[in-house]
Length: 493
Ligand code: ADP
Ligand code: MG
Image (cartoon, rainbow, N blue to C red; front, side):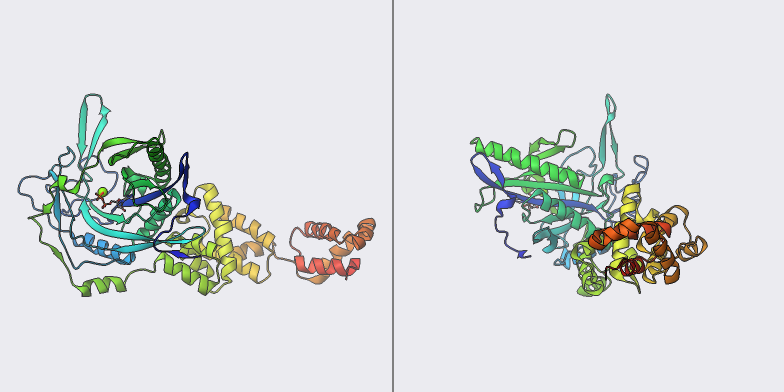
């Protein structure tokens, strides 16, 4: 694996056009709603799913004379996010007014940060199947969300819901470092994982707490950047992939036809799987940005930042490295487990003081497999970490075989209870008493003299005998002991 810093064109990612290869270039602007009870400049609630206009203060409605007051919690969360992205934290930043008209923006401007954002350059590491890719983060700034216009509930009327008006967003802007739809999806997934670990954004794209603007351009490999289109507000990771695939091919078709790309803002139509033009691209000067006279520059000390840094949780990259070195897990298993903080914690609870590889195997293959199948999550899992640990202890102490362990898992899954007690009560213990196993082995051998003769020259038949003994012992005979006894008695050793 190599770390790719300045991205070298990779033919595997090229689009094959009629006139040759094209490289896709992607940069993302992600709007992540800050996890905070109150809005960025008002005390109104941010609770999701309330009736329209239930979460609106006079500030959010832009009543004359109302003044914004910065919510310190949002500032703290933005700094923590910056630290999680290994980014430069700016001790002084400035809020600006971005001026435009829209019915769901009663102020007539959005308070955002333009020239001096709270967070500067950072990075996100992607682990793609064949390489590690470091994606640059350009900046993170704080801004207000707008309200929402509802056009389709009544044939002749439009409504405005200001519940989101003033909600704090972090806009996280990547450098144009991504080169395929897969990388863009991996970037969003990783960013969401980091935000969730930090607890700074819940990452729920279906509730609009994370939205991506996807900038796409194409170029001949080795050439300078092409003109980009920005696909606005894509609200699922899968759609991001589809939008990029469609958009890149659309641009290639135009260029190969001798045309040129208009820099524009486009929408992704998830039903048709297409992007379509929304408006020509606006430029920064169109917005007449200027520092908001109602707000002082945002300033804090390095000591405050250091204090937040000292209390950051362990992040996915570090956790993964630790799982590999401390527990001897494979890269794949570690990846699966650290994808969510909850699964990593669950695994550690199961693995504590136990065979970690066996624990990882049971957590990933048995438990996660089953949860996925039933559409459940760890939160709603019928099997707890303590119960799964109990099953593993019984395997490790040779009390039950791996096969019986699966039956036991099934019982714990459907009925609950203490695994050791269940094994005791239902007589599921593995028979390691050689005398008892020998009696069964002798029975089977006596009943099948011809097969015994055949087995002497065809050792593959041993498996059949093992199966018979296991069946007769209802799966409780120790398989190793059965194997040893059979070999000895048939005379294979
Ligand atoms: P603006 O703020 O006007 O939208 P920026 O220069 O800040 O423009 O870039 C916005 C996003 O577009 C960033 O994520 C950046 O990486 C991406 N981007 C810039 N140029 C290109 C390009 N040629 N192709 C694809 N993405 C690009
Ligand atoms: Mg932009």
